[in-house]
Structure formats: C-alpha cells, structure tokens
Length: 302
Image 1 (tube, rainbow, N blue to C red):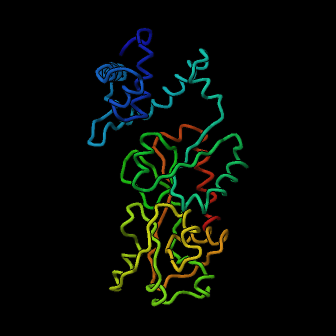
Image 2 (cartoon, one colour; image 1 turned 120 degrees about the horizontal axis):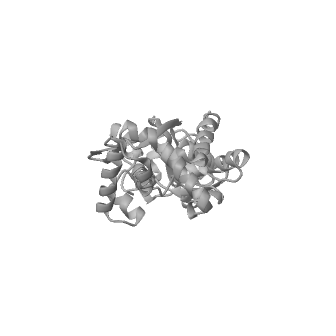
Image 3 (cartoon, helix red, strand yellow; image 1 turned 60 degrees about the vertical axis):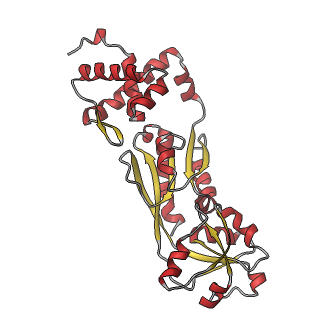
C-alpha cells in the first residue's frame, strides 16, 4: 500500500477525467496533457488502489466496481479542495445551474412549455436549454457532454447511457380544412390523392411510406422538411397533408388553423423516453430535471 503522505493528489483529477470521459485521449485533451501522461497516471492509480480501475473494451474504458465505489469520494475530495482555494471549479458551482435537454422539435412543440413550467415551480434557479437532436445524434451528444438529457424515440445500446420510458405515441394526419372544405376524416382515396409533406431527417422516406407499402400503395410527396415547426406554414393554404406523431399534431392544431384526424390506414405506435449519460446524475440539477420530467410525463401523455 502506498503511503498517503506521498500520494499525488493530481492523480485524482486524472481519475475524475477518466471516469467522466471513459476515453484516455479525451481525458488527456480535457486535462491539457499528453495521452502518455494520462496512461502513466493511470498506472500509478492502479498501484495505489491495487485495482485495474478501468477495463479496456471496444467501446472504450469501463470502470471496475472498485472505481465506481471510490468515484463519489474522489468527487467530494476535489470539491472540498476547490472550496478552500476558491478555484474556477468552485466559482462555477456558484453560478446558476444550466441543464441542456436534447430533443427533436416535435417533443419541444408538444412538451417544451410544460417542462419549463414544471422546472420553474420546483427549481426556479435552473436555466433550461433546449438543443435540437434526434435518436441518431443523441448518443454522441450525450457522450460528448453537449447535452445532459435527451428525449428521443426508442432506446440505445451504449452501456454508458441510461434510459427511462416516458410513454408512446401514434400518428395523425394534419391538413388545412379551409382548402379541403371539410374536417371529416380522410378516406383512403382522399389520403392518396393529396400531396404529402414528409418530415424526415433524410428527406427521402418515412414511416408513412412503410405503412403504405404494406398495402401496395404509394403517396405523392410535395416536399420534405426536417422540422415539424415548419408545417403550419407549409400546409396552410395548400391541399397538402402531413402524417406526424400525435403529440406534435395535437399541439400544432391547437395553435393554428390546421385540423387533424386519424389516418385511413393503421399506423404502429412507438415508444419514447428520457436518456442520460451514466455519470450525469452526480449533478443535482440534472437529477432533479430528470426526476421532474419522468414524474410529470405520465399526466401529460394520459
């Protein structure tokens, strides 16, 4: 065992960076040192704790059970040192908390204002920042710490990401009833005769095309957009229709002239949930925002 009087406290900063990055290269960049220096520090840490601390996998580094146990103690120790010195880390802790939530704009349109209101009631000192993302981008953004939490469809296989289900949604058709002359549900013929607006990251195809293909049918696409928020402006005054998640359709129709109805073909429901990086909940603000969103969504989606 190494004498604690000879232990280099800078090693704890390296340990903290490795725990948060789970990648030696990123940890070195964050600390402003070479990767060789991080590797040398990790070797000393392993000797000091008599444990590998991190195992190498194809996805990067994975903390051992011993590393997980001591992580919170290391975090507390560094916070205490920062508090005695009045360092930047301590000053940052005194600034208003900012929690960054990644979500696509259908969730922002439907739930953004309710999330803001709920956090304002429970933790008014927290500033929420919404950042556009989707299920393809969320894992990278969470691991890069560009966002703290993400609301997306489906889950992730990355072992560093934790996930909590929030609910599910189906699809509704949305159109301008003033142009169509009716708010009645669309028939199959109506639906296929109308031009469609596609909301898609690729701009090429969407779930509607998959559903129609099952019935041997195709639609005519007028244009494609990546943002649901553009639909009121793209549909109004036209004969176009869009088929979008029900939560977004309900929110858009409630604040515009557009009408909604069930689709003439049945669409599958899909699940969505809240995700975060495994170590993000060490920040109390992130933890509180996570808990508030999880607890409120059951009533928002009822």
